Length: 80
Image 1 (cartoon, rainbow, N blue to C red):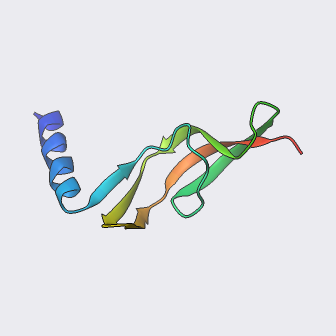
Image 2 (image 1 turned 60 degrees about the vertical axis):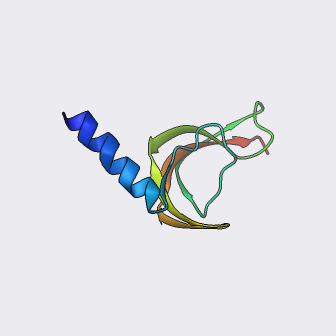
């Protein structure tokens, strides 16, 4: 029952333009993400999200996106 209510609620939010952000594997964007932990490695060529601790939310209106709550993430950085 709870999962069905959650699914319905998320459907209502998405109809209103509120989207969930799960940025695993994406390039780090400080506008929509908050880096909690970072890790340097030769495997990365740019700042990349390795792990998501808390999903974020943003409002999408046509071509514009406005953050509501940033996603809290672990970021992989290239070695300096």
